[in-house]
Length: 287
Ligand code: AMP
Image 1 (tube, rainbow, N blue to C red):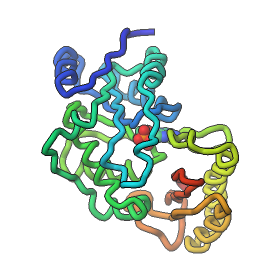
Image 2 (cartoon, rainbow, N blue to C red):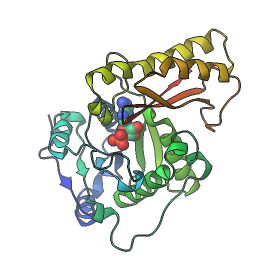
Image 3 (cartoon, rainbow, N blue to C red):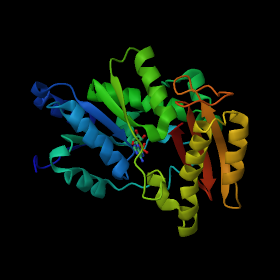
Image 4 (cartoon, protein in one colour):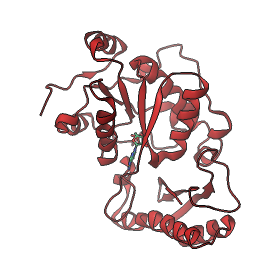
């Protein structure tokens, strides 16, 4: 075990002070999260630790109001800072060097007016049903990059579209932050871990495993030569649709451009979003 205690920084000043006293160890490696941490987040931290070498790893915990629309689940989004800090500290040698957990005012002070928009990439897939969601994501991530002065950051493939959008933003705005990704961590029945899974009733939790099972079947079909994307999508939608699962979208897209394909091929991404009751879950699989 190393390092005690784990500093939890709340303001830009705290962060600056911390950066000054750690300036010898190099530029930070950032792991942005909204907290309510689970194994998926912890896997990102472990990977960051490995990639960062002796450089400091910073985990940010911030439930970003700008990426929630009115009527979405901002109010009920779990905020569990004490248990998050314990989970991170318990990583021992893989623990981060600091946590940055700012208030909304520290990120968006009075008079804040700027928005960063990813353009067309942010209008498709999740952006279609959550307009402006990725504007909120890009805006906060750019601020976090700037505040931490990180040169590397890591994002989960669970939010595949988000990772692609952040890569494009970092490239287009010449932010000089290398974007790394890490595979989706799943429960034993295949459900992608998510801070929102705790909203599911027992019955919904069981049904939610169907998302990954359906993605796997699409993968099997493509690998078996069934490549008609419209037919695959229609099959998957029908498979998922039930009284309590409302499909938001099933899409098969090119892994880089995120454009819908007509003929699916190995390497494309099948992405799905569905509501179980009022809880919206997403998942995806490289075919
Ligand atoms: P969130 O706290 O949901 O905003 O997620 C913070 C980061 O963790 C994002 O880069 C997500 O893609 C990533 N993440 C969330 N769930 C998982 C998972 N099950 N496996 C891997 N990464 C994940």
